[in-house]
Image (spheres, rainbow, N blue to C red):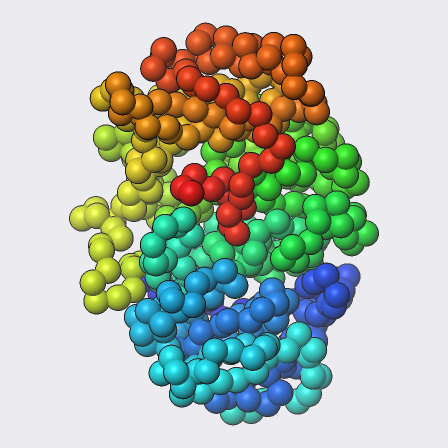
Length: 464
């Protein structure tokens, strides 16, 4: 793990003369200046010194307060998203050697999970004299443990620290108002949280179950200038009339393949905004950002060896090495995260065409059609190029002849009734696929749907 010589997050809050900075939830807000000499722990922060702390709050705003205060205090900080199944929680507690839990709500009996200490935290900050037993003594390097966001099986525990998490963040001259559709307890949202903490800005948080139109209205009211989410998050925004409620200066995509159709749609709706997509994962950290309006990434980034992020392609898989990557998976039986040269194999497959690499899908998500490999994401990209399509999800269906066939759920841009217009759209989509894809990749069936299933992380659900 890289050495973290930076001061804890709390000491890096700006108490200067700039505009007031806030973290804003759906119902309450926290002024960051109040956290410089205030606390949401009610005088109990010192009890968490040198402990492995599970942050299991119901509210993102409280989680933000807890993370700022615990960095430099706790030995280990285990960030628990709200959607972690209870049957996985026991394994997480044991693997991370959790001996304290922080929450803003009633929790499962901590004793039943072998957790000896439960400390409450609140987004209501008490302005008070510095807690001398905490702030007056030397800080320590806190290990940050994030959970992977896989759709099946128990999540892996990934070890970072503030140095690796903040390495991609560049200081800016402006004070942006960030918004994110992510939960800040996942890597994508945590990056935006840290950008707001260190970049002199504010942050407007999402709220679980909040209708898209209501969320966009809040973002507009708070004057959000920079907004981040997965392509699937943005697809949900663009499919409704409330998309033009906001007027961001910068739109950021990450977490899934950013196809050209999505980038072009965002450019059309937000012509005043810079449109960028970042490649990042919990394990590999932020690899690179692409701001030229095109899908994929320039080939010159590979094997650059510029000392910031090293990128190589091995067997078609993207691999990254940098100070931004995690150091290891946690646990006695955990697999190795880094190869012998220090690279993380991301599992994302790419192909080079001309002077650019394009993402074609995940290594483990291949559909086998009669022995031929089909990446669902590649087929989705072709379908989404049709101007009448908002989004698509490609899946497999069992076939007695080829083992599997390719099928697709498609959301049409217009609300077309069943009949000739919808049948014509289906034929046109198939024609696009036949033009751009090998015959075995062309969907054998298309089903038109009103929406696509999204996971709690804002990604398409690819496994039922």
